[in-house]
Every structure is written in structure tokens, then in C-alpha cells.
Length: 126
Image 1 (cartoon, rainbow, N blue to C red):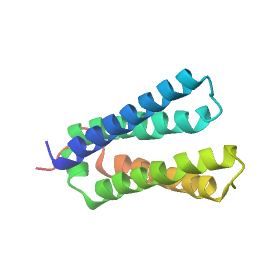
Image 2: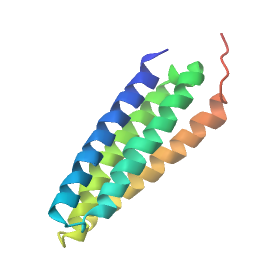
Image 3: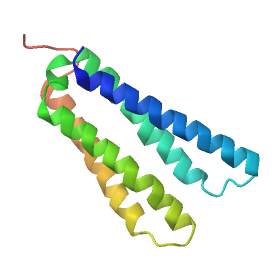
């Protein structure tokens, strides 16, 4: 296994743990006002990165590519920008960060789609 699948899966697990902790805090405080941000953390941070990690694990050419690493970096950046941006928007602190994070998330998913189209799934040239 190349480093990219493991990196994606470890990052996904980290985002999941953060999301679970956040969920427990929301439950304990009975304040679920930031649940949309929590949901995006879990969906993009855990689910999407987990799927990508599994894809890269079975598609070694994609995992070795610069495009794969670019997708990973863009995905992590999207989570880091989008999740606090949604929380800020909900809290009335402006929507600029949420909008920027949304664009990053769309670009990350488009890049992942391009990687899958370019390298296929489960194939290796070598």
C-alpha cells in the first residue's frame, strides 16, 4: 500500500473522532445549533476521505499520482475551511468562509472524479 490510502484513512479517522467528540458535547449541552457544521465534518471529513482512501488502496496508479495527493490536500483544506465557516455563518459571523469552503469541497470532489476517470478503479499499469 502506498502512503496515500493510509494518509486518507488516518485523516478520516481523526475527523471522525473530532466529529464524535463534538457530537457528544452538543448532546451534553443540549445545544444542537451547530449540527450542520458537525454533519459536514462527518460527511466530507470522514465519509468522503474514507471512500477516497479505499479507492486509492485498490488503485495504486492513482495513489502514486500527484493528482491523488492534490485531491487529498484539497479535501483536507475544504474541511478545515468549510466546517468553521458553517459554524461562523450559523453564529451570525458572516458566510465568506463557508462559501470559500463550499467551493473547495466542490473542487475536491471534481478532482476526485477526474482521478477516477483518468486512472480507473482497481487497475495498475505495472
